[in-house]
Image (tube, rainbow, N blue to C red; front, side, top):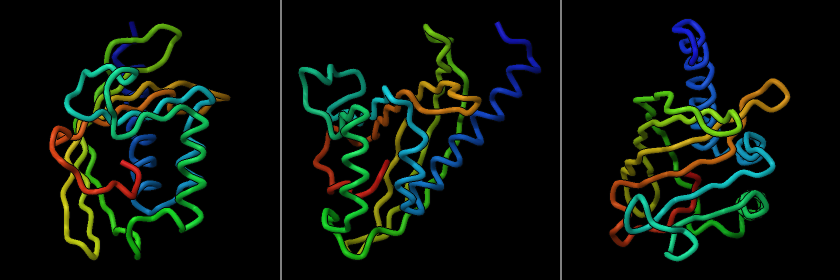
Length: 164
């Protein structure tokens, strides 16, 4: 169990990490965002609920580390965008909290986010609950796992041509 002071220091570091990740996403800094991942990272955006089995049911995104790298390379080419120009994005992140400790020392974190997307198609608001497992690697926090549970993930969604 962490002391109150240690917990506050950890929460400050985790909050700064999540804010930095959000900025990288909003500003389409794909390589910087990719550098935040551990070698065994998993990026998951479930469809049709929060607690589906991604090995048996469809997901919007279910990427292992090599697929994350491929996704970033595709975004960097400019050839895989479903829209031109890229969406302008701003996200608000709130309710960041440390959750139960994880096996192996990973830090479990939860947060809420609201993403405002402005594109030629329209303006869209995406709301989500995010779950992270963060890990210290060489003295820096890295993402070992990120699950983005879109509030409306059971409905037909516009193509996500950006990082959620």
